Image (cartoon, rainbow over all chains, first blue to last red):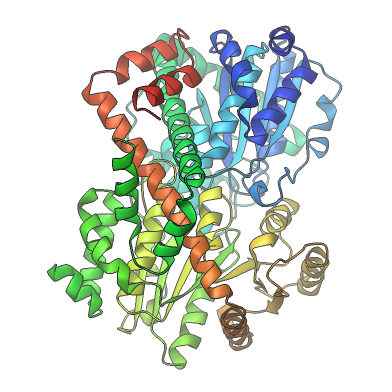
Length: 312
Length: 312
């Protein structure tokens, strides 16, 4: 429990070690995660999502600077959805946010998992808990806004930022449209480019046609993150949304939403692994796969059969 | 079983109806999918992936034209990973590949699911089976190459095309690097743009450092899909890879890989749904979520408890 104690005291190395265990997907991390869990639920989680090239990292960097000026500690999780195939985060930590690298109140981590379906979001969640338990006031999760897993990840944040850029093609506009529902705040970054006002207008129009059950009216900010322009106003916007959530008790509702999602994801992962392990141990998996490949049975019947054997 | 018979005879409307059932995620589709399964495994599956704006749709359109000229029937599945939030594919079928819309040998469908983790890939798989059973010679799956689910989807194709474009930013180059491992064929599209040769060179260099366990040396093609340039050579490249797989018995190996992946995904989905239903029916879910949100228990212990009750 030495590791847990050190993490609770805010020790960066210990946190990094536990995160590596989480990423490896071994059960080794579980006892520590259990022990840390009662100390979680205090950090405020910000999700940042948008298409590749929209400047999410730079924006995250700038928001971190703003939060540090308010003397808040910050954890940053950069989720790299492509890494399952390389086994390591491609945009390495060292090229990210270099100017915060000497600030002990900022913890930055790129996430990579080669796990099964859902593995990335489960691991990201564990890292949120670790940073939360180590006392970070704010946690920023940054991820490309395509892919069900990735969007699920930011959806569970308290405040979700959707980043757009002027002048990207139609396909990217479509991606933006697809994540309109999860944005509490919209950022038109690189707003010195031609067409920024049109992009703002387009977002406004889309928002008019969408409903919100939270009572929050999403806000739109223009930024040029590379020069720090508009970032202070954006940070204020985030804090306003935070105030709103506290007043509306939505903070707790978001907490329950996240608990529900975490529970289901973990249940799914653990159950599947257990059943697959048993199947392998009983020598049943390979013959089954062979029968499926030969079309002697179908996946639906095979799954029903297994579930029946497990009494489910 | 009328629906199944009609699909086996190649009826487009019936296939579309079953696909809608699959997308709704209801169990209603299962009996038909079971009945169709013995008739699957004949289609050749091509995966097309790449960043937003790389021209995947245009390329898919052009490959379809090439295959039609060889008198092959074609099914196209455009996977839109953002749609979980809108409940409908954003890039609607009607704006896709309009020139094939009157060709009865071409079936085009955009996929959308709002399901849980893994739901998109499971549904896409079911649609592959449906198009396969209705007799399509080739099935092209087109998807944005970020997100674990989406990459899993194309990874199970017989031939996987990774599309790049010259002159995109560093972040997109990084995404390309992340999916190098799954490319059987690389396409540098919009090759009339500046930097096309450099992009080809970059891919060549990356390939030199990667290993292949299949014995296939990935090939690189330059295309300008919007004008149809280079597409004939690309189509030939796809057919050569197909020949290679047949000779190496890899076709069957890919089939087993896919069966394994489909089985696990389905097992995961069905088991989780069953256990969650039981938990809800017993009135146990909401109190559990509340305890989690209050940090009176942790997700790991909660999941272990449930699994123990289920005898797992």
